Image 1 (tube, helix red, strand yellow):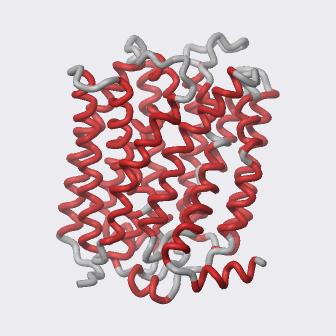
Image 2 (tube, rainbow, N blue to C red):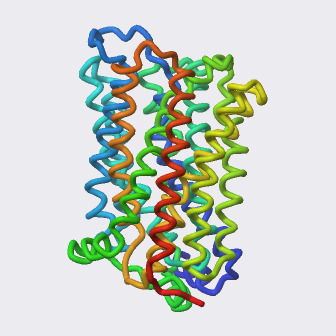
Length: 427
């Protein structure tokens, strides 16, 4: 059956292939989020055994982010060097290890169970690169990347809604809730990873337009960074801002929504993210229509700058009383993800194609990611110690303004850098 399905996909119409491959990637990464984010639906007030100055939930988030950041650093080597045939097994083993850590979180009392969130984040940070490896280097990679990015926009809200339902309706305790939420998604994870394994590799026509993709050794990775170092550094700096803001919005959504007056509406997590995904990803998928890699790279940079500006404009409109709290979260989220999602898919895929060098976009994604999560940890530390007197909403608004202004400048500078560079042009 598996062989027949792969043969059918090799001959399939691009629309059919995109639908099947996109569904497999979406489902696999969607499932991963059920092992990562449900714990954030709980507020963890007055935890027995916790007496440190650091807020308990911030400690949990910091521990997971630390594991995730270390995973991204490890992933620079692992994701760029792992052979395609071993990706599926690696995904299942890593997510299985993350789930065992969640069981440990429930069994081990505070404060020692904080370490389990570190062990939970440590394997999960490599999943994106492994899943995206099935998507990159194809003529339909923008569409596949947009579908895949939809998974982390939608899944974060959905799995938090699942977590809130387990807490409020199924009456699962806050410490067992994360493991219970993850267990619900094991069947979907297994099915989606199996389907990913049936996808054929990029065709000769894909390689002709988007450059052949292959594992990279240390020397090849260093040579690529040396070639485009200043531009990659500017993009990474803007991505640090995005990751820090996006993680804060994601991990403390319960507190932000409570400050906005939606504290008891568990469905608001999903309700707000559906239009965010639609707005952000329809814009990004349109890049697929731009065949020339240099032009596409410029269009993607323009979308990133526009996303930063939308984030700042929607925040100002909310403070001016021009839009409702729900509209603010939707438009701010749309701006955030317009700027954020290209880094996880089409930006670096097109940069590799623009360069004309045999490489893998996963390597560049993990260079940016490893730096981004360090920024996320820094923002959390500032929130706990430097801005402890500031309420959640004010801190969120201030962070949105800073991210918007600095990020737009950095992304615009990166666009100017790449505009001056030579590459493998298609025109």
